[in-house]
Length: 123
Image (cartoon, rainbow, N blue to C red; front, side, top):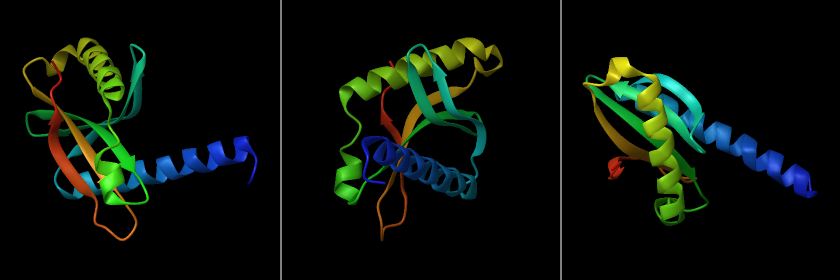
């Protein structure tokens, strides 16, 4: 797959695999999935997870090295996640009394997944 379309497809498939790994990792920690690949208000959230009274909007980043993954959520991405999170909250009024936060799961070959709770503010 040396064409641009082939590379995009391979990147897309790697992303799906990373999201699946993050999903199972969080489920092992007691989180339950509410949505995958939620899109709204011009943004996308990889995973929407719940544990107790907390709803986490989770961004999944997989890179060749953990340091690269940890630095992969820039301000533009944060803004898109915040917009999508607000859209999710608006469409799910039953969750109004919950605690909301933005989490991230970082993945790199040869490393355990790293879940960072409240990686940035949703305000």
